[in-house]
Image (cartoon, rainbow, N blue to C red; front, side, top):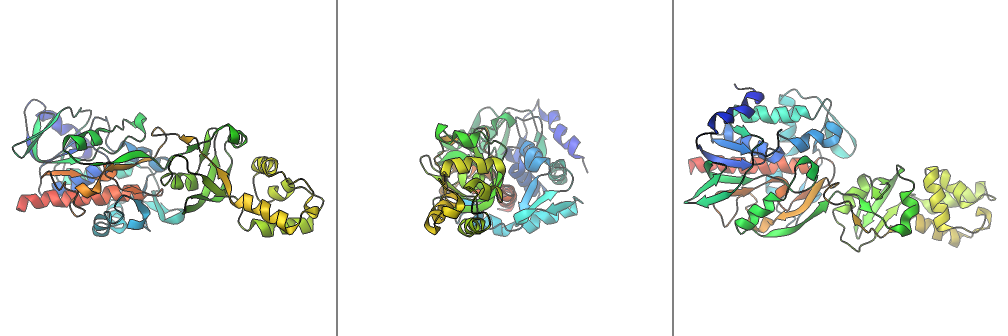
Length: 408
């Protein structure tokens, strides 16, 4: 069997002559590699093209370099989409347990962190190597550092970068993290083939705050357990104050549900009223700052005491006054000026409209042989391994469908 290294370079032998494939996959990320592995092992002749010099670049940087490759709690409710039911088919047919089985079969050590998040013990490179090895088993060609250029479709054949195929898979992701080479080419291709788009936007992204919240920008680096809310959506994890605004897992989660103009509220102190009453009984001559320092980082307590400004000692504060302070601590309200955009967004929400795709095969309903998978599609997961699981599941679904074309 070819090594993954040989696999990446074998396609160079074909650069001077046109080859015909069963499928050309655009994008050597998680979804594209999974699709190539599944289709190739089922007998399809597959070519993967990517402009990047390495396969799986987003995999390599994910999870602090250890790749949060799935989540044990994955289900359709962990994803945003104009059609919340679309992801159900692929997720139920290729589950987190299926991918974990592949990880274990390759001898990759892993561990579970909070909230069902699974990480490699060693390095994210192990996940990329595993996917390349799976592609090698199916004889897939992987051609890196290759510009896609013009894509044509004529006589039921797709023409890309000098080669042809019966099927084309859009697995180029979204424009988040452009420094990694991410682009919006998936949307250009969708428009070319008449597929509608749900307006793309940065997701899992930090917020920026204006001058009215400058005091919070000055405590950059302070993190605190919290519940962050946007509208009726809430997540309980850490919030982080940054030199530009708000971040941390809870904030990133709600950012996917945020629209410009909406408020973001953060609950910084569970059972705040009871804690303040307890502080009043124990240290009646102290101010609010002393009570807050018992439960919150000092720099944050300083800012909150100034913002809320309890103008009396705790012992002189009535129950109603303490209840009002508690309500402010549990509904600390911010009006973000925006987000840090695609440069800091972990993923892109929106994308190719699922109404144009089959949920079973990921094939475009109006363009035979055209598939879209992964982040290119309007399916966006929560933080915590969900987006990788969508890449594996949607890539698997398309790979199976492409292989099925051979028997049709």
